[in-house]
Image (cartoon, rainbow, N blue to C red):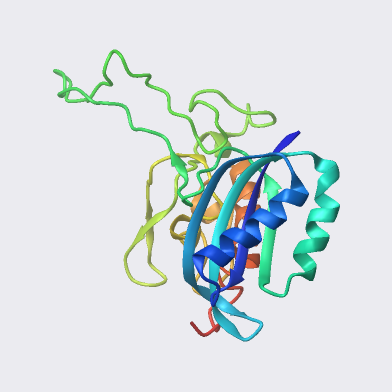
Amino acid sequence: MRPYEIVYVLDSALEREAVDDKLDSFHATLGGEITAIDHWGVRQLAYPIRKSKTGYYVIVQVTADPHALPEFERLLKLDEETMRYLIVLNEGQPTSGASVLAERPILHAPDDSGAEKPADDEPAAEADGDGREGGEPGEGEADDPEASAQSSGPPEFSGARGRRRRHEGPPIVLLNYKDVTTLARFVTEQGKILPKRTTKVTARFQRQLGTAVKRARFLALLPYIRDHEG
């Protein structure tokens, strides 16, 4: 038994009761135990699927036997009202689509030197996008000065186009591929992923970002190119 997260993009014409009946028939074939289910409802697609501009999104987290997946996917492919689906291993991401951000340490008032110090009951080090603490280098990054200066928070830009400057965002503990707001900050106006030299994130986080953006594009949460009509 392994934990999975399944994202359904169904026909937007379906009612809530019809969606529940359809999911029950799917999950009866899959077996296992449903741990969470979240109906996002009808949403605008980032690009048309089967000439439809809207879809009914449902996110389900389930613990199931991997041997049941082939038959389960066969039924999904045969169902005409299932426009898209995605099955991934559940890594602990919320069904709501939010990423897990690290909390900033609580700062006391400035001391005599004018510097702020973290509270005694809060750790000074923060987890970066790799889940490591800030002062602990990862594998292959011990002697890399560029990696030590990298951040794993979402880039915050300001200024005119072509002269934008990056500001620090909160460190990301777990990047959720359904978090369109955060992913959009790493994508250019042409739909390309910003390079690591611009965002200053770690190499491992950049790989996670690429996977998350590809999944979001497949589910029509993000467009492949900016020319897609809404």
